[in-house]
Each structure stands twice: as structure tokens, then as C-alpha cells.
Image (tube, rainbow, N blue to C red):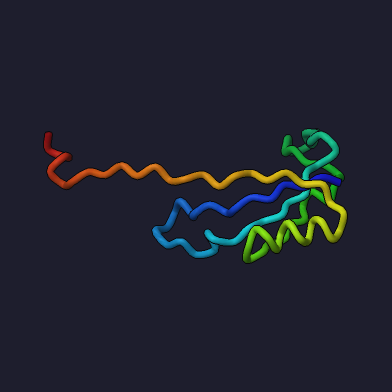
Length: 92
């Protein structure tokens, strides 16, 4: 049973940063996703891949994985790239 630990990104649809600082432990699927012949949607029978656990800190997520014997890999948080421009740049 493998998992990945990552930091949730900011919601792209809103300017707020709610829940952007929490860390998430998400289990990886062991079976491939197969398309449903009737609807065409992809899915699988692996219910463990649907489990998502949220933590306040990275250390809490790592401690939980170590305590439960879960192999994990850490996905580093990406740094936002800011494009600094002024209002006058729209008219150049």
C-alpha cells in the first residue's frame, strides 16, 4: 500500500488561500482504471484510492504514515511564479 503526501494548492477559481496550507495523504491505485463499456467513464474497483486524509503539518502526515506502516513519497510544494506588471503594461 503506497501513498503520496503533498500540499494542497490554492483554488484557481478564487483569490483566497483557504485550505492551501494543509497537507494531504492520498493512497495510490494499484489497479489500472478501465473504461466503463456503457458510459465510457474510467473507473476501477480499488476503493483504497478514494481515501484522502488531511493534516495540518507535513510532520503530522509523515508521523501517521510511519505509525501505520505506509510507504509514501513526498511531492514537493510548488512555488508560485508571480508576474509583476502594472496597469500601464496593458496599453503598450
